[in-house]
Length: 453
View 1 (cartoon, one colour):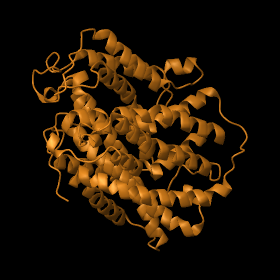
View 2 (tube, one colour):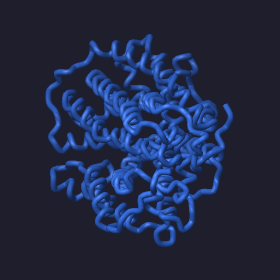
View 3 (tube, helix red, strand yellow):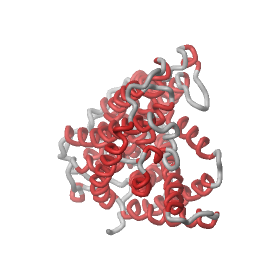
C-alpha cells in the first residue's frame, strides 16, 4: 500500500518482480468494460449487419492488439515506460511532443470514463428514489467518484496489477450473465448491411478504440518484469489479455444493438435489453468497470506527463490529471453537446497514434530490441540527435500524420483519398506504413546496437 515514488526512471534489476502472465490479468481487467461493449453497438450503428459487424470486430482486433504485445517487449529489456523509450526514435526533446499527445489522449479517455461514471451513479440514485437531482448533487457525485478513482493510480504499479487481477474474475462472471440474458433476444439473421467503404470505417473504429489506443501503454506495465522474462510470454499475455475480451464484448455489444436501437447509450439505452431486476447490477458493473479502465489510463497518463518534460513527481502528476478530468467532467455533465465534441476530438487525436506506432516499432526492429537504457536519459547520449531532436523521426511522424489525414473518414472531415474511394477509411494503415517507410528512408546510417551485459 506504499505510494510508488518511481515515475519514468529506470527500474533496477533488484526491483523487478512478477511474471509475464500478470499482464494477462492487467489487460483483461482493463478491457472487460462497458466502454468495450458500447464500441460493439457503435459498429452496428454504422449500418453493418450483425455478421458484418462480427467480421469487422474480429479483423480490427486481430490487426490492432498485437501492437500492445509488441510495445510491451521493451519494458523488461529497458525498465522504463513506452513513451520514454520513444526517445530512441525521436530524441529526448522530440519525444516530448509525442508524450504530450499521449498525455492528452489518456486524459480525454479518462474524462469520458468519469462522465459515464457520473451518469451511471446518478441513474443508480434515481433507482433508489433520489429524484430531482440538483447541480449540487451532481458535483458531489463527481467529487466522490474522483476521490475513489484516485486511490489505485496514486498507490502505483503493484496495486494496479493486483486489483486488475481480481476485477477480471468479477467482470467475467457479470458479463457472462449478461450474455445469457441477452442471447435469446439477438436477431442474428438481420437483413441489409453496409458497403465496403463503411466496412473499412468500422474496422478503423475497432482498431482505434482497441489495440491502437492501448499501444502507448505497453511497457508502462511490463517494465517491472525481470529482463530474463520470456519475450513470447510477454507478447502473448499482453496481446491476448486485451484481444479476447474486446472480441467477446464487442460482439455482445453488436448483439445488443440488434435488440435495442439506442444501445450506444450505455446508461439509458443499453439497459433496455436487460430484465428490470438486472438494471441495478448492470449500473454497478458499469461503474466498477469504468473505474478499472480509468485506473490504467490515469497511471499511464502520469508517466506520459513526466515523459513530456514536465518536472513533476509521478504522484503529483496523477493528482493533476484527475483535477483536470474533474473539471472536464463538470463541463460535460452540464452540457448537451460536450460528448459529441469530445468524441470528435478523440477521433482526430488518434491520427498521431498510427504514425507513432509505425516509427516506434520500425526503430525497435532496426535496433534488434536492444537499447542503451542509461542513454535514454542522458544529455548528449546515443539518441540525442541534433539539439535533442532526431529529425528523421519527427519528419516521418509528420509524413505519417498527413498520409493518415488524407485517407480518414471521420465526423470532423473526410480526406481527399477517402472521397475518391467512395468514403473508405484506410487512415491507420496509411499513417503506419508511410511513417515507418519514411523513417527507414531518411535514416540510412547503421544503428548502434548495445551488446547485452
